[in-house]
Amino acid sequence: MPAKNESIRAVAITGASSGFGSRMAHVFAEAGFDLVLCGRDQARLDGIRDAVTARGDRRCALLAVDLREPRGLDAFREALRAQHVDTVVNNAAINPELMRRESLSSLSQVADVIATNTSAAIAVALAAFEHFSGRGGGMIVNVNSVAGLRGSGHEPIYAASKFGLRGFSESVKDAWFGRGVRMTDVYVGAIATGMSAGRADVAELIDPDELAAFVVRLCDTHSFHTRDINLQKTTPATRRSKRVVFANGVFDLLHPGHIALLKFAKSLGDTLVVGLNSDRSVHLLKGPDRPVQDEHARKVVLESLRFVDEVVIFDDLRTGNVVRSVKPDVIVKGQEYSVDAIRVSDDIPDNVDIVTFPIVSNADGAKLSTTTTIEKMRTDQ
Image 1 (cartoon, rainbow, N blue to C red):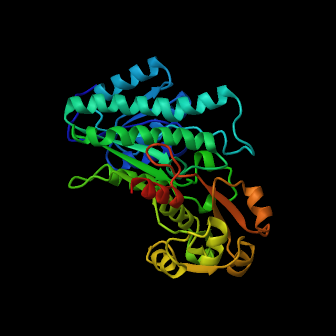
Image 2: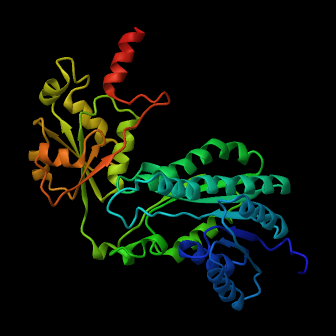
Image 3: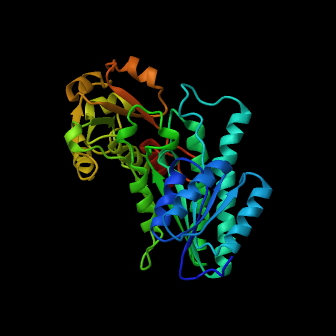
């Protein structure tokens, strides 16, 4: 093979034999990159190579290996060196929960998801860092998921596996940046290919070619670096009505748990209406010393948040009446309650979706709450 022209960039893409990985192969080739395509299906890799090389002079090396095995990782490391790779797209993942009604239950199934989405992905990133730090720098893109950013009640094992990749990336990316290795985490909503191909709304999901072109641009910046980015699907305004999301609470002393829940709620629709417990209802729920701030002060604080569209004060202990007044499409609650329990206790209509949000904890693992904050202030006095 002729010597590599160092002015031509080379990208290694994992999970390239199908789905979004195969679409990225075409878009990176069109952008002028040489390719190293990694996957487990030799026949599919052959077909992709034939297609991308037929349209130009791009080189395309294939690795039909299993990156969960030492032999596969060794071959990957060698390919990075031999093909002078300067960009790695860490894309390979599986999600067997997507087409199931229940979560995975067997240890072997859980282990398979973690091995593919977490362990192998981390190993790929480590191999890329080792290669890039030895050549003066490079770029790693972790194709993560919004499930790895905020969880997913209907696919918890997949979400956990992506949380694992996120945790690793957050732990090392600043140190790696100091060695010239840029790593970007792309938290992606559902893509109209691969794992989502069987969905009824597949035509309205993120376009894989548009997303691939965006990833290419992320890899081609020079004066700045994108540390992480959250990408969600959009639906043309001509095809949708405004989706109203409702979340409620006391919101006495705002803390990161409140902010995370409200941001998550806003991401589920167009308009976020926050139901705020009145002072009278807070007395009944929390005791005579609460709230710390009266309902008008709490309302002003919530209305100052850019992701909150409207605040409604309600006087009941349950949300049934205010929900029937607001008429939301979705209700967001903390995960300390089950969806069934919420629907029954608050008498929520069946046509309203209920979504739970994971409890947010501090660095010590303790639940974030206004009550905990108040108790800490009293203890510290």
